Image 1 (cartoon, rainbow, N blue to C red):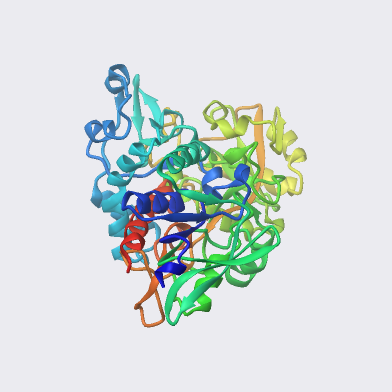
Image 2 (spheres, helix red, strand yellow):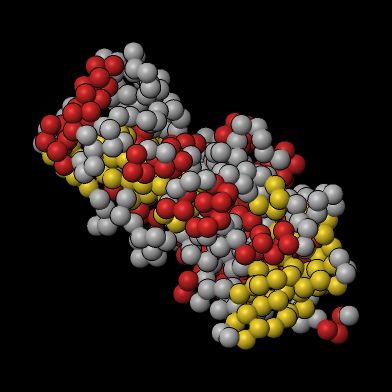
Length: 495
């Protein structure tokens, strides 16, 4: 049997989780081939489109220095990095998934988070403190918030560049333009992958296969089938190659489905963004400053509590709310209190934007919105805002809540009355799907009896059972790295 092998391990996919698996396979002395459907310029799945934020446990700046060693003395002296302990991480994932998450998988993720980032550094990945995204200046000091102290230098593309450089040095073979079609079996054991590449169809044989090729977010038919009506019309924030083929391959041989198959990470995305991700813009189409403004639908009505929680805990579920609105769109509205605080993505050229000196004039420019309904909403909202003008601090929930509204704004409720006003049109952008394959904490794919399928492992967004309904920002890449390392280790050792 071994004479027929083309390698020891086949990894399907070439993103964060896949490359973590492949590099770990090589660390354990086994031969690995990576199969990537995309061409080299588009390889890497959703990782290529990621902002690169990383959620990890840390007790203080000493732990962060193990990940971001080039923090200067001046930066340390002027920053309050805080801490993010195991208990907080577990609680955030549990709370945002309504405690439906698989506790064993979540504990594995959390407990492996810091070690995974240190391992990534050893592969050449560079991290930087998230001053631009996750820090606000309060009384002359930068205060970090949301459990996201660091991000990958260069975002997703920077992460992939480091991985591919390490893979080339380690002797990892990456085959682009290669589509995985089916799993090859020897009895019950997975022993390879049936592939297609540029008109050729062939089998690759190995002792183990790692599936790390994402969910089904780029498959409009599967979105409609599993997520529900109108999801086929959602914009895809990332790669067009995550079509669910890996899921179909595994399910066809009896793998167990797990997780929230009718749920997905989805958020505010520019109304006129292209159908799938645009690498020239990256994540710039996202619009995440809604906590300091209001969002209205076609009727001119608010439909979500924009200040329900810190943005990193709400952004991944707002897309579903927008999808349910008439016409599947909304406008985010800001006045001059908020405009200076808008994130960088509001300043790109590829935006759907309206500006006006007064709310009355703005009402006429919000395409598709009932002007009278909008003005009534704004009047009611401004009347419900508490008095006073304390500084806006997005690092903590400030309790500035409206009163008397059927739909409150629970934090950061300030009057919207200082012109000129700005508004941005958004729709639903889907990032990745929550449903996937059932795996063990050792990244083994399980069958209907929850027994391991010999020779088959999975990691990354193809895994189900970790996220339900919501998602703490920065957990996806960390999950991929943690379980990618585990999958690579186990696949290399499999006999």
